[in-house]
Image 1 (cartoon, rainbow, N blue to C red):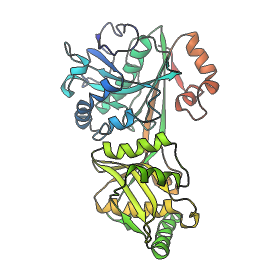
Image 2: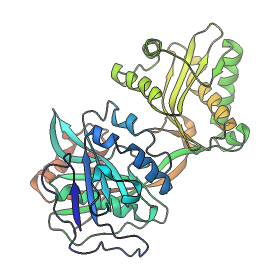
Image 3: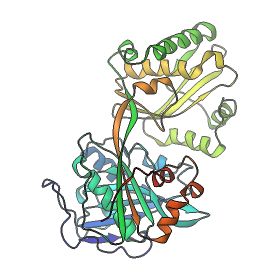
Image 4: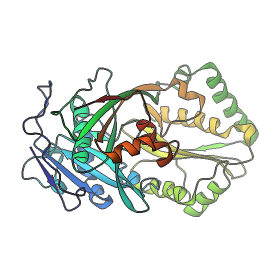
Length: 392
């Protein structure tokens, strides 16, 4: 097996990872021949249509529809995106690959500090739904292959999180390696609210307290504020920025600008609002729609109105509207503190971590609490004493 790279490949030459075929008990999985790597936003973004088609074929429709949005998120701008193509057919350049030319693809980012590359890589979706695009039976294989490719290329550590299956087996996929070691762990992540055929049937799946609040605060804003639910808001950027400043938890200007631009960038935006009889916008909620799924990315609620629980009232209206449109799942990116989370469907997520056997990796793990922000997922993973390390 060999590795093809482009002019935007990782630093240094990528060595051969296997002398022979990939070790796997899955006879149905085709043996990949090449690994191709693209680096940088422009190069990765250019592969959007290929990734959309690949995700459709692998049962992950919608996973890459908003690729441009996530590549340009403020939290991603300080990192370098890499697209690693696994099973790239011989004689096919990575930047020319189609969905017919690969077995799988992984989107991963390299951290930078003050503009300097760190050799630390991680995927950006903790739920793993838009990181590894491959047939379900080989996703873990693809994840480990990508992590090992990066570490064999000089990375200190690489982490890939991927949505798994209840019976997915995490197993070694390569011969023992003196240069690195591998860890895996499983997590159950409450990922989405399943929407029933009617609003009342959906409420019946929620807890008693949550049902009561959704009904109570909706009636309150209807009676006292004569609110109107607007399923498709038309609003200029300046008005949107002003709404943010007047909200209960104003976001930073660059994040809010990105939220607004994202609404213009996606094909099927979610942009709903609650408007009072006097014309004031009381609540806005935004995100994306795709293939029966609504992804809620953010919500703004007018400050100074805590007694109305605008967040809960908006969610009541949103639930009813999306059910009427045939939506099957409601996802809140990054989770939600709202009590409805207790009724979310849990999804099995697998973290694959490959670490170089080096002093740099040891120091990274030893001092991760001071190197990474407190809530940084990679830092938390490196400090996890329950990680199942395999010396390969």
